[in-house]
Length: 157
Image (cartoon, rainbow, N blue to C red; front, side, top):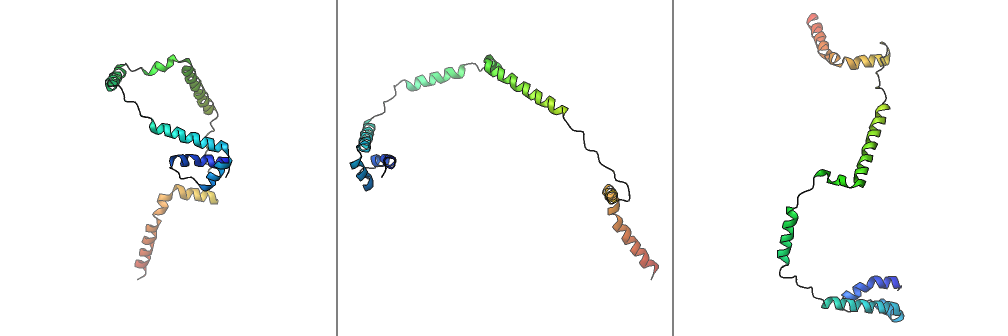
């Protein structure tokens, strides 16, 4: 095994009691650097196992509650409080100038609206435009066709 592979497996070997891969053991016998690192990690873990967290002082909760009340009682700064910082005010001014420039120059380069081209009647395009414009009228021609058929039937008994 290489030293990098062994270093990746060291934490598992330290946390799991004695569960060391045989290839890792073989590498540790031939590499004193990795063996020392594993020994140091085991000593560190042993110290951490012995460590006890200190108990908070008996007045900790009282002091914490008092501090929270003090913070809640502080007046809330108004929305303009950040203008006191010149960097923020300068960045806001720069953003407003950029936005104004963009809106000014995009308004000047607007293209005129596209006008509809009216084709002369009798052409294919002109006929399609006429059908589109008078769609509602032409949609009722089915009723007229039915009336014509009914008149033909009544006339030829």
